[in-house]
Length: 162
Image (cartoon, rainbow, N blue to C red):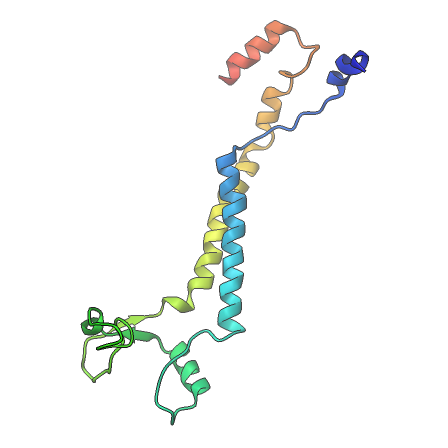
């Protein structure tokens, strides 16, 4: 079996790595996680029940939820630091009186789009790197693994790389 081991090295093909594990983590893993969350959030917003508004019984819940979704929700800064379940049901949620200071929150409508944009931004460097690299790394190291290339040529090519 060792008879053909030397011959096998002549026909062995090498895959040239143009990136490292950290770079692959950015454009593969992070992009996949972000697109998965974008799909999950999009499905919840546009297929499921995106928001639940609490009100009196005389307003139909579906109508109120649609109104709350289109109109942004808000919180009351005066109610942020009140005792939960004793004074307020949730921090920032209290009875609103006209003219009272309130902070509007419209972020939830844009989360799925921001996640998708982040996915694109994590993949763009990979796209540009592949386009700009164009096989240069492969051409630089082409002969370094060849057993028939003279050793002085390999040494000079290695010096060019470093």
